[in-house]
Image (spheres, one colour):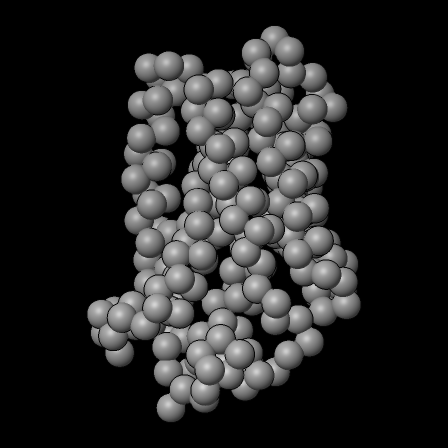
Length: 216
């Protein structure tokens, strides 16, 4: 299926824009954390390389725990909007600490950031994107929609990671952190406000509810 055919349908277009706002914009912050981890913790946070590496490993383990103990366990039992609101909210709080002057950063703030980021990576925007990109599109559109939204995500991430060091060098890391926090805030707000009501429904029920009929 062509992108033109996919996006000529108003439901598909709105859903793609929703997923891009949720996942692609969130990924700008997440890819910064993934790519610049040593810089964040060692240069800005003034931690040793050993502590930095241990915290990175801890964040990865928390991602696994977040997937298993939060998303998998409660994703179909508790309000998804509430889960998204809470997990996206702690991610926003975590990134907000980097807006503070470097001399104001303390060890507990860095630990809070790593913990919140780790939990979010396992049960936040990425987990919901993977769920929604499967639930919200019928089989006819699903692969093309997922390819499009993932393409946008990777291109946006590449452009941002090229620009981020330039911003850091020209204006300082705090200004880049303000933009990153804004990315996290946009993703959090859009996902919370427009969270689709698909919990407990079959794919066929979701399809008929969204398109008004079964898509052939």
